[in-house]
Image (cartoon, rainbow, N blue to C red; front, top):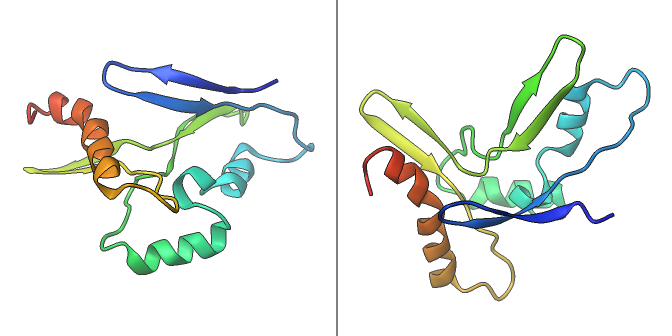
Length: 129
């Protein structure tokens, strides 16, 4: 079964990949989150080397961007996703986060335009678009 699907929103489409499975008894949901984060979608591969490179070349911290978001109940059941579009409001300042999937041969201008499109819903919600 292929769990990937296209999610369509007002301004953008996104490839979504869900998965489910059984875990070894005693495994907690937070163990799974720690094992899966960061995903290749936000860090690249090989993950360790990619994360080190990102830390070297990015001019800012990621804050909550790409972090796990979701819910968990007292029984340890829950559902999480990746914060691929998010923001932080501190008083009069707003920081919005989104990203692109740069690979060998990526077109920088096209990727920048994609980033602008990804930010539109948040900008509209803030009355900034």
